[in-house]
Length: 202
Image (spheres, rainbow, N blue to C red):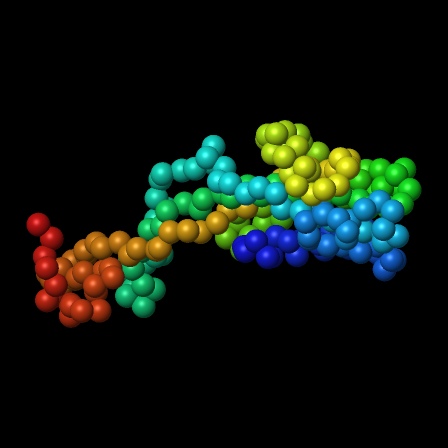
């Protein structure tokens, strides 16, 4: 899943909550003049402020996908891949309304919407993990960010998305089986060798 698709997933959750009203949903840097409480524009903004690999989920074991029938050449050779690397995305969600209590109410509603969201899975079964309301990993980062926004400090909701990313190239595994007293090579180079002409196993 790409980062664009993650943004679309978050946007879908928020737009489902706000409905068809006048509240805008954006993914911009919350800077003046576009973002101020008295701008007259009611909006919810999602800002990606950090992304890094989740090292606690890093695995060095390779995954081998075997064919159900290794003698069936049409099914292809077995493949081995590195496990996915997990990318952790940290978002700052802010609500921009002229009335602060209304903004606070929307932040609470957003927390509930993301906390109640059902688990999201990729086609291969890997899960996208969404954590909402956890404190930022480094408070200093957000303090420095707000100083660059030229905006007064606003309440915000911290949202973290952990998504598996495929970064390795799949490699074919070579192995042999015996057919009619001849060794047959199955693997990435099997197309270059006719049965019985490939190198025999030692």
